[in-house]
Image (cartoon, rainbow, N blue to C red; front, side):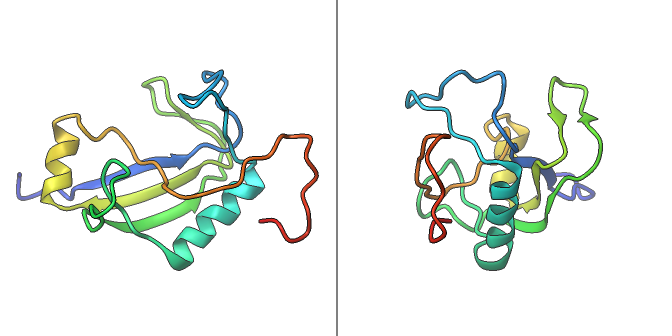
Amino acid sequence: MAANEQRYLLSIAYQAGPDPRIATGADGSRDFFSPEELEKAAWEFAKSSRSIGLFHKDGTEGHADVVESYIYRGPDWDLGDGVVVKSGDWLLGTVLDDTAWALYKSGEITGVSPQGTAKRRRPTDPVKADQP
């Protein structure tokens, strides 16, 4: 690793709303957060978790330090590679350790993805006061 590499990545942790490029996910469903729900999830992550692992595998935490976590509030930001950051998207800035940085540079790490649990509901299901 070059001495001047900061090993910093700014990534879209999660896109607000549905991705028009995805009809259904690998499990046959199409999951997404509303911007309001995503903001709550991002804030909860910042307050209580901040744990970063690799490839959604247990026991891989500790390969990155979260240095920024925020909801993007600006105009559309075209990154020039087909990705557009939109208002309401959750951005996560991380500094990777040597192992994760090597995986990123080799192309094995291409982004970040939150790991967690949620309850699926149809868009027409009412939200009860005690549901997150």
